[in-house]
Image 1: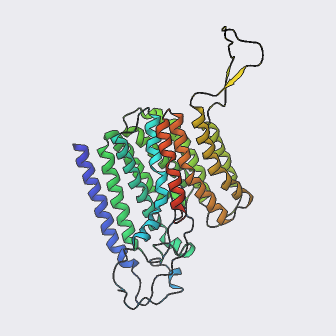
Image 2 (image 1 turned 60 degrees about the vertical axis):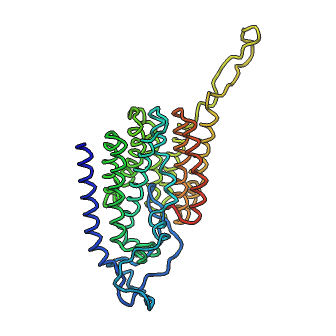
Image 3 (image 1 turned 90 degrees about the vertical axis):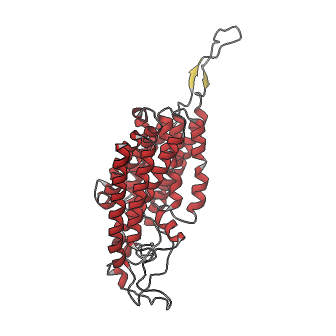
Length: 389
């Protein structure tokens, strides 16, 4: 009971702080009289695994946003806060990338030797809320930079007020912690540092060398959250968390140069890391066994080659992961231009689904693996409308 009361106090404090900041930030982020938001353009890439793409907008207090002001519509209210449309929020929160989130908790439960249950679903809900909080906070923290490099995004274009995004991040964080608390104290124990890592990454760590490790830690903790909520032994989920973290580290490192391009060394290193992950996911290709004749005696000749039990599903999922992540990374190695680098980041994000499914299959959860893999077609379909980078 004490834990829940403490959680309620934390949630209220986070929400109140976000609302207070939102009021001040909304006032600064309102379009000036006689200046409207820029026309939205197609989504562009942004940083990291845990991140997809928004549209654009007018940066609050940014000189870049004032270089080409456009007249606002005659019926526009120049002092009303900009809350945005549902489509704007879909773009801000990068909803297609949410399909890559449930597999974390499901893989964690499988690694801990548990079938998904009600508490696992609560962990999935907590993960989704914290992920969306990170998306909103990411764009709020980058609004000045986006006004120059990605002015089509919802915040710098003025379609969503910065304060609204900050308030959403605070509310989603509080809701994510509340759902984790409902899943039990072990889950809340993991969710608190996970939420802290998300906020620390967006508010500062992503701008220096600590960014990729922080993002990798967040994804690893997300998988551990599923193990803790399911009631299994958390230590059994450590190898799976390490594999997911290694993949996230590699893709996040590539994403740091997705708007400028650059050296081929980073995508080449990411290709090497993800290849090692794929190799670790694959089952032993064959198991050596001497086939016996009808009398029980092993005949002379070369030994027979028998697939390892359950290896077909693991092999298919590992191959699917390798194919999804390797091809765009190879293109970025050959030509590290911004478009191909962004495509490599998008491929790395989508590859998380077959990676999570392969981790579940390796842990002995074929049903969980198939359910996770079923999210991949949905992610591809919605990613055609809203970019995940």
